[in-house]
Length: 212
Image (cartoon, rainbow, N blue to C red; front, side):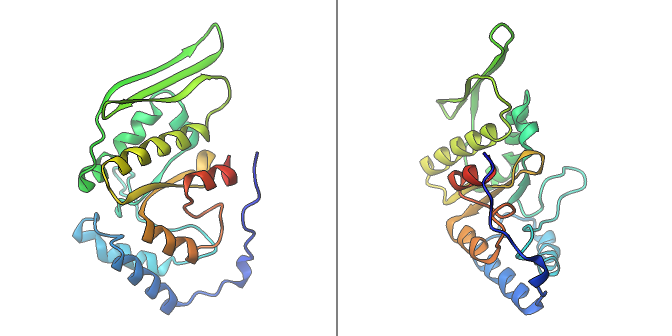
């Protein structure tokens, strides 16, 4: 069920460069840009300042060739694509470069994804770092929300196991879904700055209430 997020009156927003610069400075101090290539950091900061709008979506710059974010923080996460065959493996492939920068081990040793034509249901499981996780079991619905939620939940478990301070946060849903990889301090700064619950990173259980 769709829950109404925070209703934002965008007409009240007036761009303030000083506020934008302070926000980006705070992000930087919290290590938001530490995974970005050094040659991209100045342009990333400039873009974040120029496009700062707390009534809208957090911004980024995506590489034209890879379609991956140059900040290594804010990813496209199309719920339909992630649900469809091979979608989770594709998402994990997109996240592999940042996982390597984080020294996060994400070894897939088994992956089972099968549509049961007789029963008209989907079974999907994955083994990551030796632990088998059920993604969907005897599932008959459209899993555009359930699948991103479940893989985010699994990755967050594995991140905690390895004592890495970043977690997965989800944004919006369906074909407009996003995935953010943030420390708790980065999340808290963005959460108090950005206003629209439909378009800002949310802790995944809260996201499920807003977007599923």
